[in-house]
Amino acid sequence: MIAAVDVQYEEGCGYAACVTFADWTASTATHEYRCRQDSVGEYQPGEFWKRELPCLVAVLALVEPSPEVIVIDGYVWLDGEGRPGLGARLFEAMGGRASVVGVAKTAFRGSEHAARVLRPGSQRPLFVTAQGIPLAEAAEHVGRMAGAYRIPDLLKRADQLARQRL
Image (cartoon, rainbow, N blue to C red; front, top):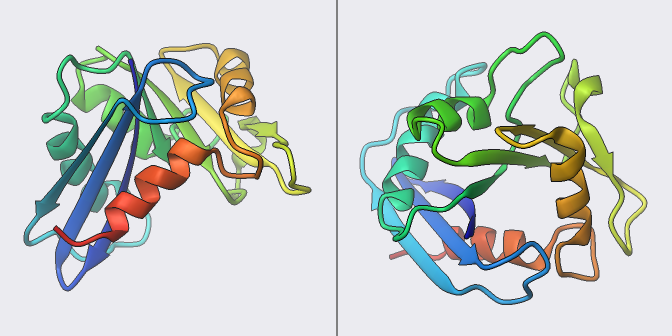
């Protein structure tokens, strides 16, 4: 099972969402999960993961059975030197039990290591990084995900769920 997760913030709360699906080409979710985290920390430049990680761990705790792969909105590795991003921190928090694929919409300074994935209907690439799965394989999977546009449908769905209040 694969899980796509996202988090949105409002008034000091984090709203985390997760959609699970059976395979990379699935067009619909098998399950959807949401949770609210009260009192999330303030955004700190360079420390984004400290705010987002507890929300992701909380929503993933609702998923049974645990996913084999987790797709995040962001980077696993911030640069080619192995500086950890949110995805690497999530991989560690999950005890390495699930691979993590990061799908970022914008280039990050030092992100030359990220695989560029050009999806249908878009002239702008997605930036894919990974831990626990070969980068080329992760990029291929993201390229094959359902959806006619730049952002795959199930990643868009996770974003939409996170934007809804509980």
